[in-house]
Length: 216
Image (cartoon, rainbow, N blue to C red; front, side, top):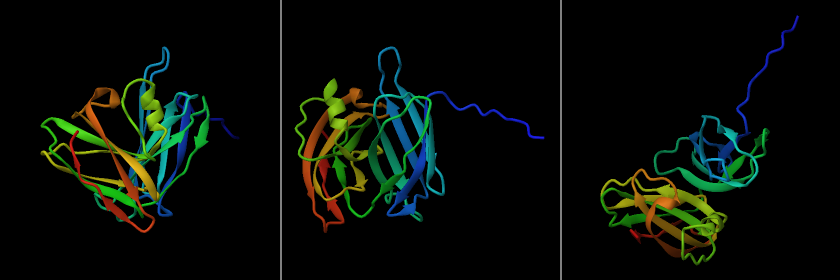
């Protein structure tokens, strides 16, 4: 005799998948999605850990509008500093389970130092595709900017006035590096104190490009 068992899934959309770095399942990491407020619906924050075989699972996302999924993954045997950070766009579908695998490359990356960071502040860096002209981080401009994210975000530790950063998984081409200074512990671009942009070219035969920045 078989007894039926009901499983209650969290309301909303669930996203699952596997993260690979250079074709190999990630050893560990994190997947993050921040869903902005819309109408009477408040903003929500969703995180999932990447397990030892590269799998992750996000639960309870509101369906409808595309969102940015931030992936931080370590290759097998990777140490701190070897992580690959990338942002991809996904569209949650209401009350459905969807599968979204993420394939990352660690072959090309941007690294450097951010200097003169004031006490109590950190700097978040994002790599945007192409040569972007950014005059504001408010209103609809933020949505348009996030559509061009190619790598990051990377937030400095805030320890001392100088910090190192790494943005991995970039394809060859031109990028605009957006550096946003905000108070440590603050979340979202709405809390920024100042920002700056920097253009950099990554060639096909350049595994790593160094760009040292001054805190905006």
